[in-house]
Length: 144
Image (cartoon, rainbow, N blue to C red; front, side, top):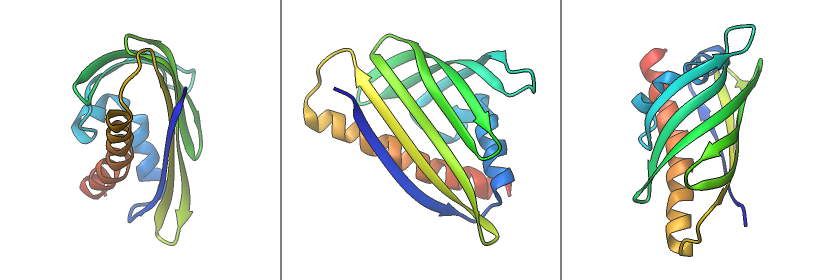
């Protein structure tokens, strides 16, 4: 059964800065604690990341993933191609202007290959949402 997490938050940086951070997927380990590595394998014609290899560590498990990314002017989405721990993953950041800053919506849905206790799954969900909010906000402050 898929598990979903979602959050919305505001950042004092324009959408262009937020999208620049998201496009820089190889910097994920710098602002997203669970990401141990991220490497662009292929790019779309416009130079944006298309396929990415990532190593993610959460709740005591490390997962090597291959993800396919799609981009619009205000969103970043990814879907799982291969994983050692997950059978499914879909994620999206949607960035909209709000005053001089940005409003960010983060959605993540994952399905594990193995059954884990509910408490561990909830902890991993909270970690994903907190990382999306705190990590992206801190990185935007650093770059703005």
